[in-house]
Amino acid sequence: MRPLPRSFYDRPVLDVARELIGCVVEHEHCAGVIVETEAYHESEPACHAFVGLTPRTKVIFGEPGVAYVYRSYGIHALLNAVCESAGVGAAVLIRALAPLEGLELMRERRGALGGRELRDAELCSGPGKLTQALGVELGENGTSLSRGPVRIGPRERAWRDPSIAVGTRIGITKAPELQWRFAAAGDPNVSRPRI
DNA sequence: CATGGGATTGACT
DNA sequence: GTCAATCCCATGC
Image (cartoon, rainbow, N blue to C red):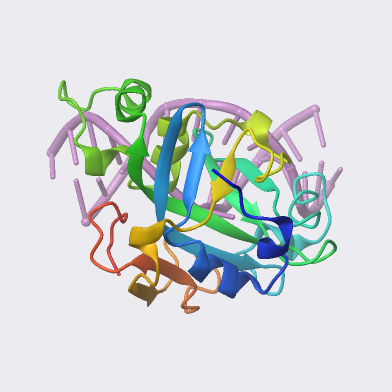
């Protein structure tokens, strides 16, 4: 895979969030097609960068094309792509993938649910699920999405010009009205509630 | 130093 | 539908 260049991310975060739909994420022998994203920007209070530059937000304010990984609810690692120029706090949350490679390894990492093996569409259908399936951890915070260990490549042929649904972001309490969530229309891997 | 709040998930009523 | 798990870090004293 030829990873997306830094310049792809050095643009308005809403453009990047929309165009990441259909792109491919790779990590440790697993890969999936991005089918759901959300945009976050320092100008609105749901974004971690809203509070300004702190040890936690340093990466969001840094170079575009870098992974921002943080722990959510004490349990899950969530994966973001840092966007816009260095000095601007903006990132795209990767919320769901269509599994592409390494499905057995994903199933192993995700474990059983009620004594039952997970179906394909349950492996990466949420922001915490996909990091567990790919094996992405907090240590990858601040690493390059071009050089790895997490890498993102361009849309493959089948994903040229996907139909994209737009809606409000999930699980936030601040700025809930912004329609900054993007998803591949009708894709079974999109998290609930569907757009 | 103590406290409180999550960009979630899965189990349970 | 409700709810707890669990930890990082921002904030306030």
